[in-house]
Image (cartoon, rainbow over all chains, first blue to last red; front, side, top):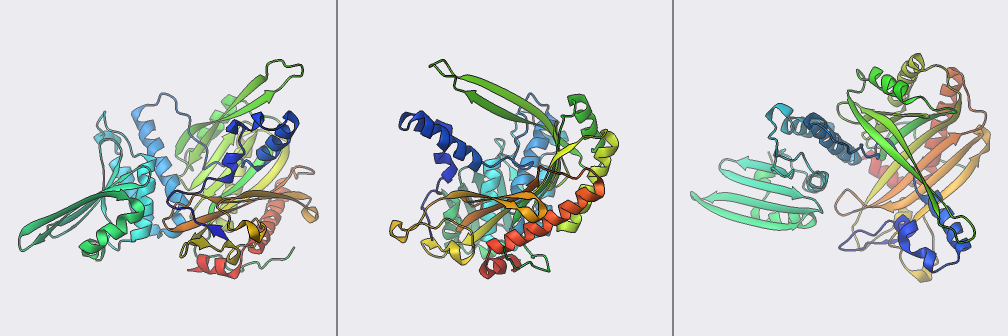
Length: 201
Length: 250
């Protein structure tokens, strides 16, 4: 049985076994060598998908390519939970958002942390209508749904945070609501505002 | 060892990455590696340079200062447009990798054979000293209570005395000799951060390799890979329960 640690994720056990834990100060040299040997054995070798690209001086096209490739590899981590049609659509949108010909020099390509939060939100909300995607100048992904004049916009931040804003017209008067919450409470926050108005075809 | 081998592939296999790796006795010179990487451009348009660092610390006797040796290895990673098909050229290793969604062994193996033939056309004969197959599975279990009973889904986990209460995290490794195919099996299992909300995720990382009497002829190499695949399937099926299988069939 595994106890669920809330609100933060449990630390991977291997993080307790590294060389930089200060272990060398509390056990003998020989014990430290033995523990280090076993800890090294536990440390998993990297795979092609987990290796980081070299972060050298890169031109714009290379920076954009690296950002899109990293986002696509993040998508692969949850691809078994996404239908292929939606995955392909997300990739098309990402490619389009990073078009080098349209790129502004001071804009940042998509941040992996923002995209990871987006994937978590989409797999939890599972909107039947796919959002339009945009990118803020500092690389945060923005998803937007529009039904008539009513609009829902969610901006995704690293570290599992989201900021959402919605506008709904009731008898021609706009009602506006907004929140800044952890992604885990996004569904709960939207629920009183009938998100199916945007999410269901 | 017994295990139920599925005759049909799962609708949503939990494989996050499948890898076939061929390691050579001698490294390929950097210029040749760059050239061969370019030859794969039509199949894998995207290229990134990757670097691995090996750090070796020697503690000399007599209280002298430790000596640190850092070895840097540069390779080339190429990927398909959707970044799910990857080939990695390291000086002493050719790696063909498939990220999720996993298209099945036939497709993955066919791609490996195709890439292996192109590699061999470009690089003169190199002795192979290790052949390996690695499948990294991440099993995402929905959280419905304050705990997850992983033993309902997995046959591989750490069992602690009940008096200690529930575990919050673990990582374990088992190394086994697979005598009938003269190979080594390494299974890593751990709790890993879940990329899904309200899920707990468990890693089942299966690595099968041979370093002795490694086949050098193509037919023998391919035959051994097929044996590795059969073994991998058997090991995976032995590590999961029917409740886990239900998750992959939905």
